[in-house]
Image 1 (cartoon, rainbow, N blue to C red):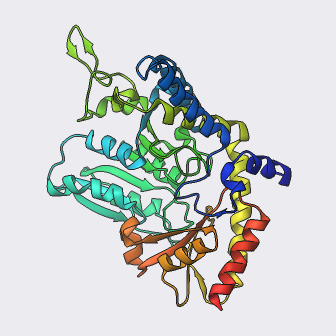
Image 2 (cartoon, rainbow, N blue to C red):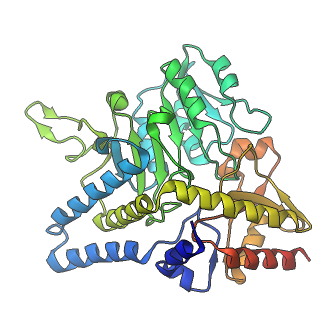
Image 3 (tube, rainbow, N blue to C red):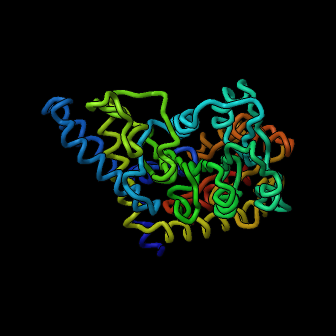
Length: 393
């Protein structure tokens, strides 16, 4: 992406005109004006025509969003469902796997999202065990080690592809090859991947993949994507059902034969209109161009951080994403986030609960987190570096 391309993105984004330097895109990114307009237009339509009456047009917008999501993930539109959050989407799919038995094994990466681990508690209470896939020398989940763990009791492999607490990129495709070879269900938490790196669910060979809309996709809060591999769909029996997900037929209430069995009749057409616009913008921009820009920007930031006394980087892996984990000597990560906020610079801060297995394994209580977007430019980097140097002094 050229500087002119970046400036066009910034010109179309109100948050870039506010005087705020935003480096918290992994928490929630900045929506474009067109995304805001799509939300407002649907709300105005509902106010003018009646909320239920405007639903017909809302359904058209939802299907446009579904097709856009399918294009981004290289999936059929019928395999895409929408949810209110990534954690909700993942939890619904996990619960739909059915009952767990004593001795069942769930294999997870050490970097697993805390919300997913919380959802597994019911399985643990039923006698299942959560076991961690060993890491390789770079700190990533190791496919070779995973292969050695496989037996008949393994009922699920789950991987957080890009962890919330740093720049690691786990080998999701290689893990998928192991899962497919042994016909074991494979879930991917792609909350930090979709909209940042190219995602091809066919190459990943995953059965389920989820992501939030508010992060790198630049969609609104309260939206998320759920992909379910069509051939795996019949394995999943959602506990939550209504007249939309399980419509009435001559045989009674039957679950839909597509991913919409995870949706309900009550949804926000306005929010999904916004998400649809954000997805279309991403497809027009090109995820490969986005990823190249994010890689270049994050590497410049890492280089700048290495030159600031007292900063320790905590990223793992051989190639890093646009999430940069660090600590500044003498500063609590959350206080550092607050102080930068007073300087109109937004970053994130993560505690142990976000990625408990990895944080505990590395003895980390908290990390500050910079997360970048194609929206960030050289001025943003300079302001961030200057602020951190001032606080370091």
